[in-house]
Image (cartoon, rainbow, N blue to C red; front, side):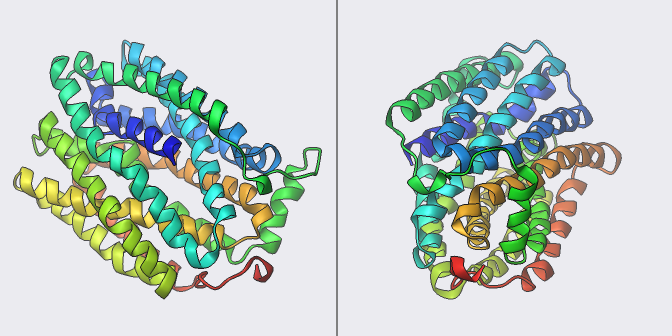
Length: 390
């Protein structure tokens, strides 16, 4: 939990300024989308091996490798002289983050029971989100201190990120131990057979892969590629302090409502919570489009925080669709799907921005989010599913 808190603080420290940083290095919105899309190739390429490694060697090994790569990516971004040089840094950062995010849900998936998993995973997210509340404002202060919204003003954030990831690596190496279930006794590389077992023994996994693919567009366009922050800065003229407040507002909902919604999901079911929160997230994107001033931008960002709550709820469903001994491989398949969307989504966003207009990105996201509802209707409620039933 400490590892997750520190890691996401460091990611949130830069995420609201990363897209602007790439554009200050000379990239257009289309080139920004291309750069992040190239980084997404890393996530797609490593996803399946990451899940396999987590099953074979344990999550500690994956955490160490992923954190080391993220630290290297941060230093490359810090020294980048133009947007093309920044691409390897984005590539490495996304590669490392994919490794870590593939392994992270396995800890709760293995250690918690169904009836407590929703609240348990939301509790983990709540605690790890508290430092993230301060990260965007901290970033705004540092950017102001180093010269404002410019490449020289944002660059030091990546140096801070490098130092933080280096500390996390030492922390994992010295303190973290594997949940014993993550290690298997099999030997040899049998990727085709191992992953085929997921489809044989999992429950409606193909439909859920499609669902997770579509739900990933909002994360990759709005959060990882940073088009929400870019839109607020370029179209709505938000300065670094408004961006910082938007980033902090984004974290308020995960902090205040995650445990409550997680508990409700454990009582009434995961699907019902998603049915209730998806329309609210769509409303937040509508407010972003029509926002006349900073107050509405901040309100929109506050409501967009439901995105993280929904992602955790989706992770809860994911770990309940397959037997425990297949979680690593299953998580790898889902990460592969998300990685492929991570390639496509920023490129689509850049093209929509340039050809149709900046607001079209968020209209597109609203349509995609609403398309999730019929897919979700066809999924089983996983609350009472046990491993023997999958």
